[in-house]
Amino acid sequence: QWLERIRRLSIHKTCRNVEKSKRFSHLRSLFTFGVADMPSKLPISTLLTGVPRLLKVLDLQGAPLESLPNEIFELYLLRYLSLRGTMVKKIPSSIGRLVNLETLDLKHANVTELPVEILKLQELRHLLVYRYVKRSSPFHSTYGFKPPLGMGDLPSLQKLCFVEANQSGDILNEVGKLTQLRKLGITKLRREDGVA
Image 1 (cartoon, one colour):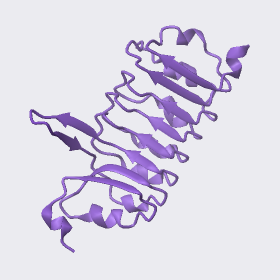
Image 2 (spheres, helix red, strand yellow; image 1 turned 90 degrees about the horizontal axis):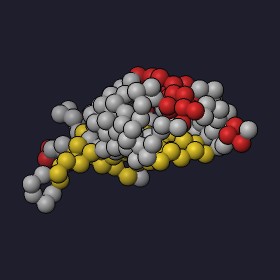
Image 3 (cartoon, rainbow, N blue to C red; image 1 turned 30 degrees about the vertical axis):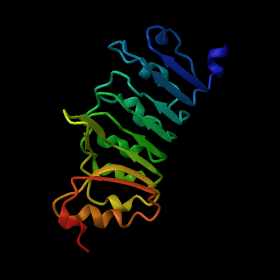
C-alpha cells in the first residue's frame, strides 16, 4: 500500500478522514494546519499507533488541543514538537522522556511554567514559551514562563524566549551558564537585576 510508504503527512483544515487511514508505518513528520474540527477521539493517537520509534517532527500548530495525548511521550526519536497556538496549559513531567527533542515551540499556547523534567532534554536547542496580549494602547504585553530551578543545565540551548525573571535573581545566574545561547528573551526584569 502507498499509505504505508508515506514519510511526511500534512493535514489541512479537517481530520475527519484521517482515522480511516491507520497504516503509516514509515511516517517521520506530521503537520496540522488550521484544523478546527478534531473529533473527541484524537486522530493523532491513531496516526501514532505503530510508529512511536520513527516520528521525528510533530507540528500540531493551531490544533484544538487542551492537553497532550500520552502517545506523544512515546516518540523517543522526536526532535521537533510544536504546540503553537493551541489551548494547552500544562506540560506534564512525561516531557522528560523525549530526550532527543531539539525544539519545543509553545508560542501562543497557555503554558506559564515548565516541569523540572525539562532539564532532562540535554539536546534542547530552541525553547519558545510566550504569548502576546494586546492592550488598548498600540503596544502589547509579553508573557513568558516560570523556569524550573537549574535552567543553566541545558548545555545545547541556543534560543530561550521568554523566561520570567524571578524575585531572587537566580534565573540571571542560570542564564549565564548557557554558553551556546544566541537569543534570549526575559520578562519581568527589575531595575535591580541590571546592577552588576
